[in-house]
Image (cartoon, rainbow, N blue to C red; front, side, top):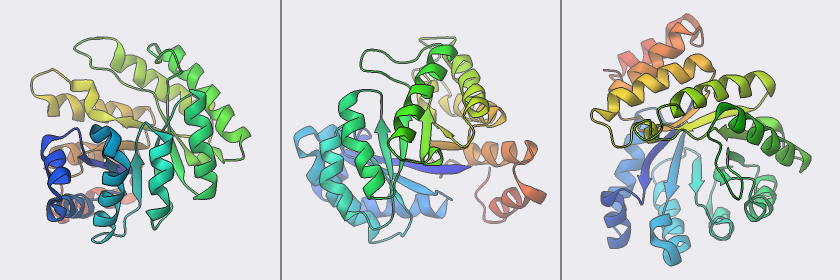
Length: 264
């Protein structure tokens, strides 16, 4: 399971304040905490700053790379922003994200090739987002065709089926789980990823919903997640799920995480 640490995101007030004020230490402490909690990638997002996004994202990249060698997930909806900052990344990054929108594909796929990156593909076209399991799988297939026909290996693509808040769409979680299972069956070698916390938006006790959904998604084949690795209850559910699904040989991942005090 690939863990992508979600916390350095300008949609969070504390992060936005730290970026705007140039509080390098705060950003670096967030990066180190996620590294120490077991993140494999650290997601970096400055999209809330719009016209200043590229400058701030470059600053975040430099700050984080001073304190950790973990690869970065460069997170922006604007291909031009990613073009401006990706040369400052020291290790092959993950790019978050592409859709079937031509400008996103044309702007980002060459960068995936040039920088030996991996890329997250959202189940979204120019005009719609995949809502049903069938729609998600159909869009995933088209994304895979576009990516692989450009010369990028299928194993460099992480499909995000897009889960929506269950408080607004009671069927969204089930549709996403069904899509994860079908995508992993139909398209050998591709990865699936999920922006986990969206499922619980607007509900009480969101963390309970998040970790329950994560356990279900792991059972369906999910092999990457964007989440808070410092949430010990969530990581406990993840490690236990991987173990029970036979994806943790001799339970060593679970045992090591327990011994490090990472589970609750």
